[in-house]
Amino acid sequence: MLKSKKGIYILLPLVVFIWGAILYQVLDAFSDDDPVITNTTDIKFSEIKTVERQQFEIGAVERDPFLGTLYRPKKEVAKKPVIIKKNPITWPSIRYKGLVSGQGGSKAIFLVEINGADQLLERNQSFSEIKLVKGSSVSILLRYKGESKQFKILN
Image (tube, rainbow, N blue to C red; front, side, top):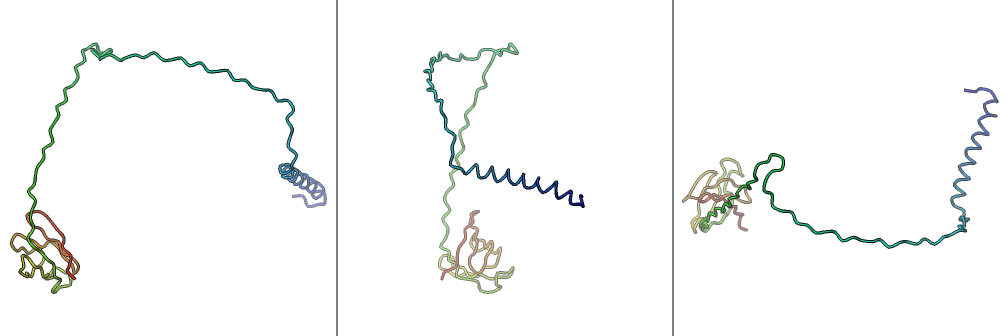
């Protein structure tokens, strides 16, 4: 760098000039003097003419223009959807009464009322086609004739 006073004499006026130019631009942008336009000419627009398009129809394709072979559309066979009606499974009267022992582990025993009779069931144990899949202290999941259903505890 410049270590003498000559550097100050050169750089100080340059800095003052740059800051002055910046301040002039900012103050000029906020001034109220707007330029006045003196010559204004009227502009006339001509009307745009619209042309109605010709209507045409595309004919059926009879032959392939590139291969020269006849065009035969593929026949689509409409398949009827197969509707399988399941007989709704009527579940027996089931009420979950609570967890007897085990705190939800693999050896937990659950008290379930099936058709008015209380049954003690463990996981994966069945009683009259009703299998206890999983359970907790809040709810159990039972499977009957391939259909699963969740039962919550009674208050």
